[in-house]
Image (cartoon, rainbow, N blue to C red):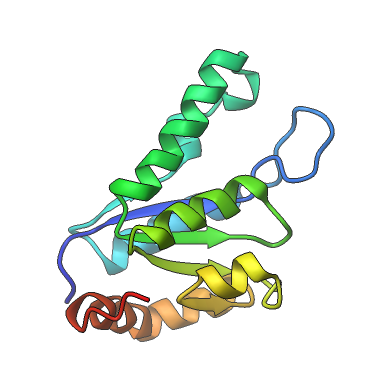
Amino acid sequence: MPKPMTFFIAGIMQGSFHEMALHDQSYRKELARRLGEHFPDSRVYDPLAHHVHSVDYDDTQGRETFLTHNRMCGSEVDVLIAFVPEASMGTAIEMWEAWKNNAVVLTISPLKVNWAVRFLSHAIYPDLPAFFATLDSGEIAVLIDEFYTNDERR
C-alpha cells in the first residue's frame, strides 16, 4: 500500500460559461468518497468543498483562492485527479503545476488528443466509470506506488 498522500481533485467548474455559473459538480463527492475508501490514510482535498460559494467571491478573494490552489498543486499535492469532460483552463493550470512539480496526474477525460491532457497526464481514463473500475482493481494504487518507488517522474 502506498504511503499516505495528498490527493487534489481538480476539474471543470466554470468551463466556458459566459456567466457566473458552475458545471455539475456531483463528480467531486463521489471521487472524494472513493479515493478515501482506497487510500484511507491519505488526505483528499476538494477545492469546491472548501469554497462552496466561490462563484460569488469578489475579485480579491477569487484571485487569492485561484492562486492558492495553483500553489497547492505545485507544492503540496502527491496525486492530482483531473476531471476534464471538456476544456477547462483552470484545470489545465492545476495539471501543469502538479506535473512540473513531480506529482502523479491522473486525468478523466475523453480529450485524449488535447495536448494538455495528453502530455501532462500519467494516465488517462475516458470517463468516471473507467476511472472507478481501475481504482477498484488496484491498478491506480500500483501506478502511484511505481511512480514514487521507481522514481519514474518524467
